[in-house]
Image 1 (cartoon, rainbow, N blue to C red):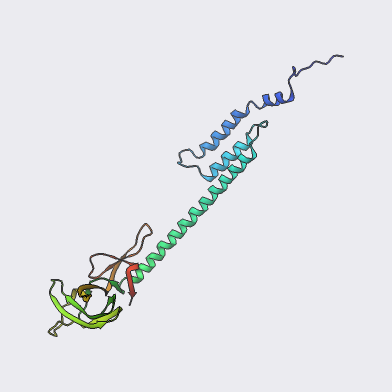
Image 2: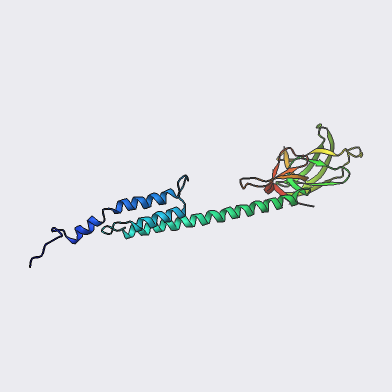
Length: 242
């Protein structure tokens, strides 16, 4: 009895190689289907990335499978992508909460009196106003000159000799002649002599918060104060009153 060799001398490896020739077509079809799921998008999402990875594994060449190190690297990329997506969600949530907190803080400041570093403020002369002067070193005399919106001197307050630090002064709203000044914007200029030279000092004055500007980029709250032409950052406020 004779036996006919139907394999024509082909080895097992060659037979398997021939059977895998259709794999590239199948792989291309699978990759095309996965790629189409993100068609029209500018970036690859985590779901599409996972589809591409699974398609690659299903259609890999059985004689030349995916290298273990390459497979682990792709899994690491997927894990990183998932982590970044979660982080973005958390950051967006924190940003939203921060803006809500800013809005609440802003609403509570409107109408309040604050003390800020400024030389000009709006004064209600029907009642006394308290300000302060920063003295850098001990001096023999400090004066505070008050001028109205026209630049006319209304009154000068003599604080006498002062030690280094902050010293307060009170204006009762009266002029030099004892009459009441009109309500409005007034400028306070504190001065002294240091080493024989006339020196202007820093003054802190009360002002009322008319409105608050909230930054849309996560910046600091800006206070719009009565009598001041420019807004003042919340961090520049020395004291918040009632």
